[in-house]
Length: 370
Image 1 (cartoon, rainbow, N blue to C red):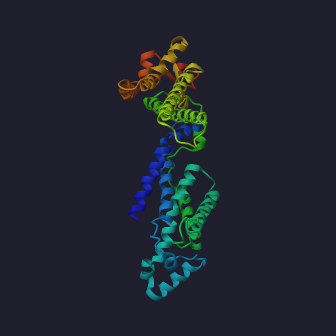
Image 2: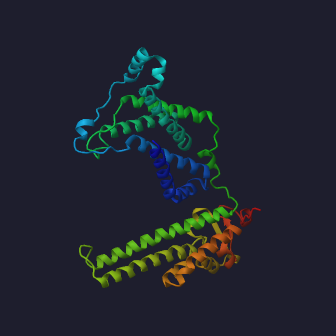
Image 3: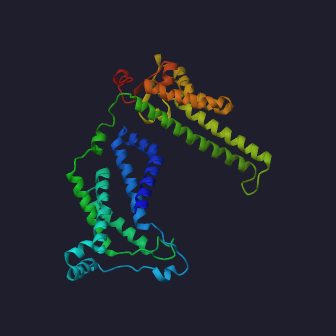
């Protein structure tokens, strides 16, 4: 059980880390802000989903020859099995035997397993209580079918009991979770509250600027992957497809194509947003930030984009020793942003940052808390 709990936490945290930036983008597009508590609840949901899988599928037995003939399970379809067994145990051993009986503990654990389901689904998704109960029943049914079919045929035989009683105990556990959600304080902002404040301008904080920078790095990484993939595909098609091995010279050409495609796409991601519209980078646009240049000079906006992101791409293209400057620039940009929301690019080009939803630059100018 310890390994299952540890594995669930690690898997849930790993999934949360991978999906963190996509979820940040979704939060800003949906609610116009980053909600840390909602992100924590989402992480708890990933950990819980991993725990559901861990406790209903793992550990896998050693399917040696003859295992299925000796250990294959059969479905338990008697809905009265639990009360009947409890009555039998009580008659023979009394209350003490009932408390220590594994059937009772199994019944209780199946309920406990689904208490977080009702709590998390109700609080995060804010679905009607009846829908949450139906979702819990459907999830429990999916689990039992998975156990009945031996993980949908991936295992040579069914190695866990599919019990119809679990459908009711799991759903009852979800009902307890719903009751807990109703009784406990709501520390999480409701969707209605977040949506009503979606268009409200907010101060430009250091954290928000750093988040925009992190998103810019993510968008650049996506651009590099997409650009390199498109370039390699074009080159492969020009060579007659991918059905034959490439020569050494062709491999070098392919490498140059991939590098050129990746660099060109990355530069486009940096320069095009600076040339059109507000001049904000993709990451800044995501978190509703806009650079405010003196006299709205477009050249300052382009220079701001080149100052950190553009120069980093150029140094990567130049190779060693220029490549060594990229982490230095990234570190300097992060440290400068921790000191002032203007950041390194803003200080170099004289740009300030405002909230894109503000009616005037004074409504949300760079906010530097003490």
